[in-house]
Length: 151
Picture 1 (cartoon, rainbow, N blue to C red):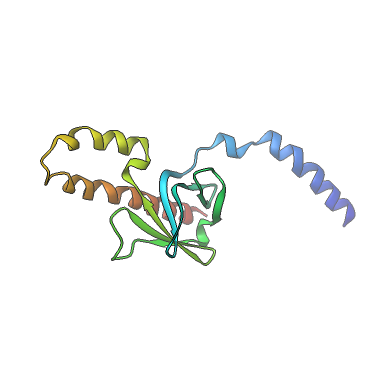
Picture 2: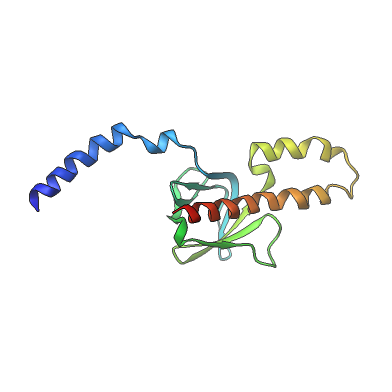
């Protein structure tokens, strides 16, 4: 027992960290910044990050510290009927979080919404917003489903 522990510690430490470096090489399956994360009525961060990487969902503050994380197979997520088009609810480790994925949170969303949509009629911006905003929360839910299906 003692030699097995020593052997595991010896091969697991420097060999895995120096050889693979998985975290730095792979990009996350999903990442959204500028996410408002609420727990019940309390706002935890207004510019946080939601990240799905290596089969785990992580909720991060704007400073990068972890609020909560869990394997994607243990996370329940959806979009309630009463939520806005850019909102999703995720239950992570038994705690329910409301995520507001703003369309301007990503660089692509800010660039797309500032162009032709800004010069339209005052009634027109609602249509593109409705079709664009669900894309962010829908993209999150689809990525979570894909990641859970693989594992």
